[in-house]
Length: 322
Image (cartoon, rainbow, N blue to C red; front, side, top):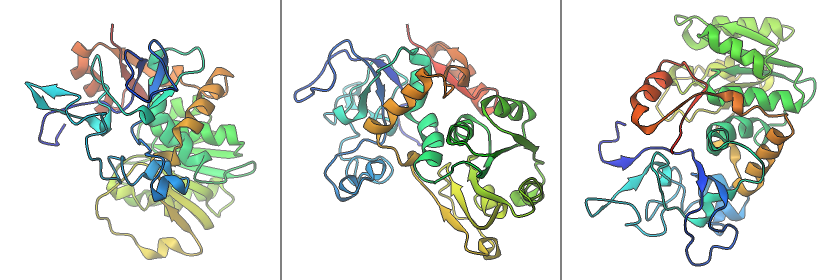
């Protein structure tokens, strides 16, 4: 909202195919589909290396993004002028035009309001655990921030069989929600706990004095960028999930000893592979999606949706169109 130019908001979405262009053969008019904002070209160095989430051509984060991700630069217009869409898809609209690679068929019976959140929040959290780490049975996992992304890290840890899943937040209501999604332990953090060092001591106490095997930062708060390093044991792995891009100071003592710090984008998503897997887990009752959507809104109630988001009242809030 502070980018300083007109554009269509929204980077998570699900809906119905209204029309298809030339060369589209994996979906047809009337199909139910999910949208993916990190759109792979399929042929650049990174896509060919299996890193579709950091495509060098189409990604709005890492690539050239030559035409706003649409089939044509003027696919969406305002008063006759080309209009960009958030993260190439602009889902807070009745219609949008996207590249074919942005579209994945919905293969199970699921409400659009639950399906749409797979396209970023679920994929980022779940994928950061299952695609970017080797969390398995007997592992301990700490999750800093239990909003929509953090809850899906927790779900990934539960599904992967982690023995200890420690949820950390300043909001007690969110911690209660974290238990519903699979947290075995919760820690209520204090706003004045700089770098969450006090919380780190609690995590170490829960994890036999060593620290967690894995710690995930899911807050987007720059001051907490180094916090997962303080919570992992020697030779543990810290994962920065939320996409912090600001310059921050890090005490290099936090890396001692043999700790690894990684920053996966979008859960290392390969949408054609991962979206059907996530939908299947939901269909089998293993992955909770309906429960993440605390409230739905009409487009006319967009202000209420933003207010609830900023106040942390929802895990996910969804705009539903008629």
